[in-house]
Length: 220
Image (cartoon, rainbow, N blue to C red):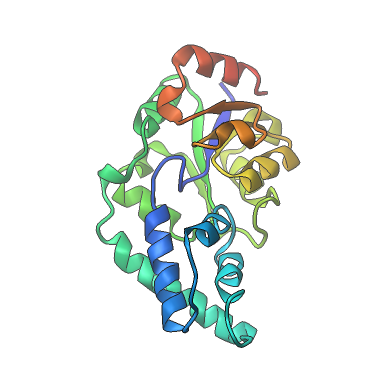
């Protein structure tokens, strides 16, 4: 079956949102930036590290050069990597492992399309990497969602056309990127019904095999 399901990582297969929030908040506090909160963190979902940094710096009292911003982004990533040390299989989201097993049994390829540059590390620590055929991440792209680049790269790595791929996302930017890339989409998460996906579910555990047959039947 020449089809592929491309999963976003954070919020779809695993949960590292809290780790990102803690790392960004630590950086903000060290810069003397007050008021960075979870609502700001929500705006960082699905976008690049540099775009996420801009959300933090909106509250800064001074401007930063591009060189300074690059150093700040590296510092945040160092904090995040420290927190990742404790990541394990318990960080998998409901239905993630079962879904990957089901797709492999059906002969459907599984890929990851994530803005994170730490995607491989996260997949390794959560034990999901052996179930992922290809990974497209922040190391492969120059444009952030809603640009479809990360998903187009994933499709190319798998050797399929965009129309043969389904994207699973938990952010509006990700769903928009899927549409821009000519791919069907499955929106998941607490806001799934509001994201504009072709299909939606609270999480992967809620998608039955019968529903997967319908969803995959719309692809290709």
